[in-house]
Image (cartoon, rainbow, N blue to C red; front, side):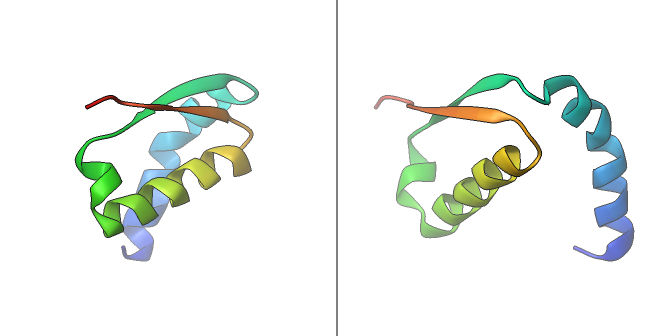
Length: 64
């Protein structure tokens, strides 16, 4: 991702980061994302990022 795209993504996400800061969110995790190594790694990075910005994720198994 180039710098221009990164800055655009950050700008677009700021309202959501403010809105959900300090909140607990439930994240469903299952299916293909649990089997594909690249998706597993991306999921873990995203959960870590949520924690880093002050959002409290609770991961639940998506079934299947």
